[in-house]
Image 1 (tube, rainbow, N blue to C red):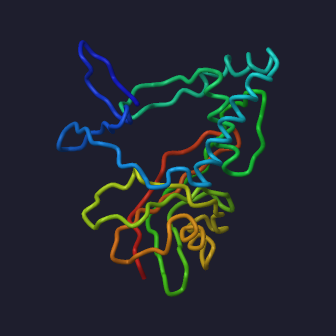
Image 2 (image 1 turned 90 degrees about the vertical axis):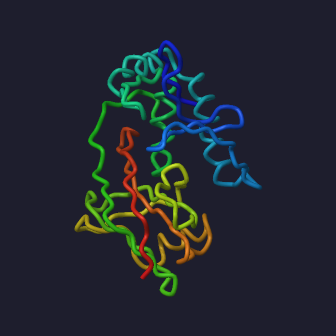
Length: 228
C-alpha cells in the first residue's frame, strides 16, 4: 500500500486489507480485491520463495557486506507513482536487486554493485497468431539481450489499461538488429503455459522490461496485442 500524507491523506495507491486504492481521470476509487480461486500458483510460490531465501541470506552477510548495501542506498534512488524520490533501505535494496537478477538467471551478489546502464526496452507492436502459434514483439531493444516478457490474460474490449494485470510469462532474447523479440513458438508457448490460449475476442496487453546486470529494471513498455 502506497500512501501520500498531507494535513490529511492526499493520495493513495495499492492494497490495504481487502481493498485496492487507485485513481484515474475519473478520480480516486476504492474497490474490493477480487480473489483468484487458486492464488497459490507454482509461479507465485517461486517468487515468494526467492524473497524468503534472500531475507534469510541477508542475516548471513558479513558486516562489511551489509555496510556496502547501506552505503549504496542513495545510488539507487527511484521515483514512485506519485513522482516522489524513494530510497530503499540497504536490506530492501539487497532483496530487490538480487530478486531482479534471478529473474534473468543471474546469481546472488553479496556486495552492493554500482549502478549500470539499463538495456533499452520500447515496444511499438505485438502480433499474435493462434493458428501459427507465434507471438512477435517489435520495437527498439538492445541487440541480443534477454528481456522479461509480461502480458495479461484476455480482458474485456473496454479495458483501457492492463498495467495492474500484467504477469511475467517468460524471458526472451531480442533479434540481432534490436527491432524484435521472439518469433515462432517461444514466447507464444510461454504465454499459453502461464495464461492459456489467447482469445482473439478479448483484449490482451503485452509488454517488455529489461534488467541490468546490477539488478536495476526499466519501466514496463506495453501495447495491445494485434491478432494476425
